[in-house]
Structure formats: C-alpha cells, structure tokens
Image (cartoon, rainbow, N blue to C red; front, top):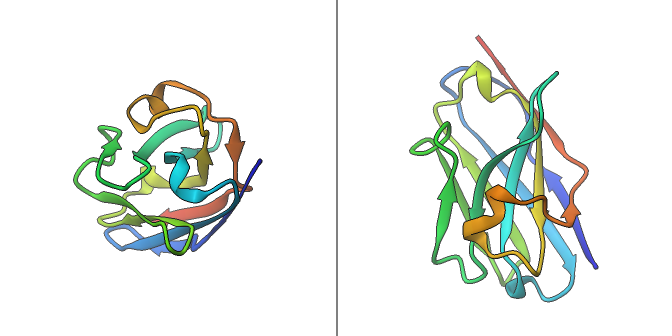
Length: 125
C-alpha cells in the first residue's frame, strides 16, 4: 500500500510559478517511480511528468517540457513538481501517482495503482 498526499496548489496568474509537493507513506519511497498527472474540466486525466526511483531519470509530456521540473527527495519521501511559465491551459486538478510495478519511462502509458486526492491549480489570464 502507498498513501499519497498532495499540496501546493492555488491560483496564479499566467506566467507565474507554483510548486506542488506530494508526500508518500507506506512502502519504501525509493522503491518506486513517481508521476504527476492532471485533469482539466471536461477532459480526461493526462500524464504530466514522471521520475525514476533514484531521481536520475525524468520524463515529461510535450505540453510541459521545458516549463515544469519533477524532482524527488527520497530522504523526505516527497516528490515535487516545479511549474514555471504557467499558462491558462495548465489549469486543472493535479494528482501524484505511484505504482511499484511501473518504471518511470512507461508511466505515461499506464494507469498507476496509487493516487493522491489531487490539488487544484488555477491559472488566470
């Protein structure tokens, strides 16, 4: 079992920045890859970013590449998503996700088994 709790969402103007955090508990944190997904109103949940167990490899969707940075602190059992140059189309509920059986490089093509409750990000124009 893995429990995930996100924080850090909020309202920001276009061009601004936010940093999301996701605290994990349960299985040893360094034993599984982590990912971030988001869901905009009326749309399906989509992959945003993933990071390997050690943090040495990261993967991004084309829509956030170069603007968002995923990182993790295995000593704090936490994964982060630094979001810069935010656009109105980044608005949505952001979820962190984990699955001990899924490596980071395929997380965008799967539906991980563990999810946080989500945190709202609203980018105004």
